[in-house]
Image (tube, rainbow, N blue to C red; front, top):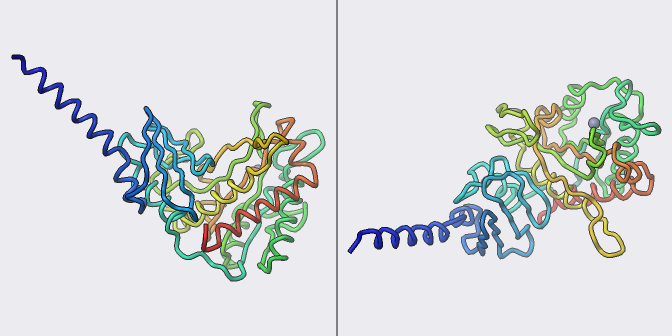
Length: 312
Ligand SMILES: [Zn+2]
């Protein structure tokens, strides 16, 4: 009798065992050993028995884009064959599953309308990024003030000489709970559209843009769990716009990571929101319409207040 049979048998046993253990320790380290694991080829879904926190986590082995309750989220490292990276497990746990108790009293926030003064940011024939970001930021400020929060803008009008350094220093001097930078995107590809929200990559991890090597440790790394929580809930809120068929009309470009100056050096939780593309026909109509700007502002406020509430 050949020895091949028991050998094949043990290989089969190993592969069953492998599948059996896939993402089991990830579930345990996320704090949910009883999570349901669904494995379909390269796709892994963890369903957590949780009603008050994000519950459905989808990963693709070898890839960074993931999905958390339907919102695209770039992992800091590609999903492994058997588990997520320790960096991602720790961050997801701290940011979304077992966060430090967030503040519920009046918040001290700094809203940063991107660009200004001689720096108009991106532009088309009619609009500049700096005027769109200012309009949205003013709405955000007003709505948050109506909720009783203390809210400053880095610039109150279109004439500013504030550098990026000045903006982060302002954040330090005001002892803020969070820094929210609002921007408008542009691309040479007119088809590019949608919303994305940035945080700093975790220490030792690459950004999600090309040529974004690890940097740090940086000031912003100390605040990454709350920055991630903010980015997730703001991105989640900004996607809620449906057509008459109930389909979502906003393209989800995800929670991404970049070493932007304001994310690196602000000594507080910090995010940078790209509300849409001025170079895309559909998006440019959306982000320049005053009513839509108000809707975007309302959604940013919903995301911020959700991130700071004790319940998810
Ligand atoms: Zn910008």
